Image (tube, rainbow, N blue to C red; front, side, top):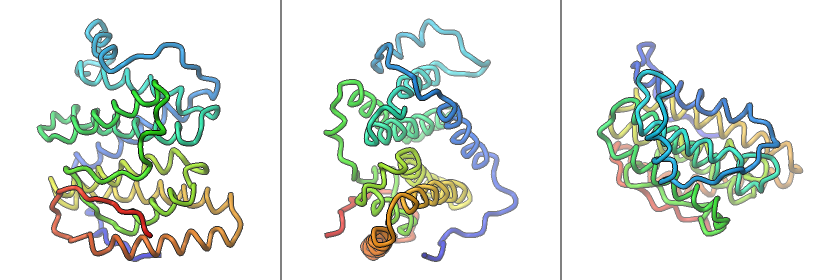
Length: 257
């Protein structure tokens, strides 16, 4: 619907950008292979994962203690991603996994940025809410954190229009991953420029294409027209917020009236 604002990706993408995409995709894939009958057998807090990691050997040569902690948290999320859980539980569980993917990547790159710790905090709060059955206290619409910015208003418009239209019921995983990836991409652009962000924006676009397709297939034509109209309204609200100056200061996201 909207003209892409991403510049053409250079053939000489940096190794960092390629690794970023690989980390996200390969960390997602084990979850997709999980059996839908997975059960919650043992609830671990973040502290439990830290204590357990101290006693575990690295699964590969250069795995840090922090990565073992984060992988422990990923395992704790899997039962909440199964078909017997509500769409809201699945959405937040996948969102938390997206944050953990980000944190694991930041640690593997020895990043000095605060992005990794912010991602870990986001994931931890969601995991605790899932374990204590208080996920309903977390708002579906959340502001963009201070280390990121609103870029690609067309994608943010689609994302939040889908949320408002109960699109999470059709595609909880795709919507969750697209949101984290949009935030990740903008942070990369502020820190390293568009060559480090373009692949992530493309990934977010693909997740949203899948979410939109799932929604369209699940609803009648008038409902789909309503979604399109809502996307346009969100875009008109968000477009002025994209300053194009690659400065990350967060963004308050107000629902359309």
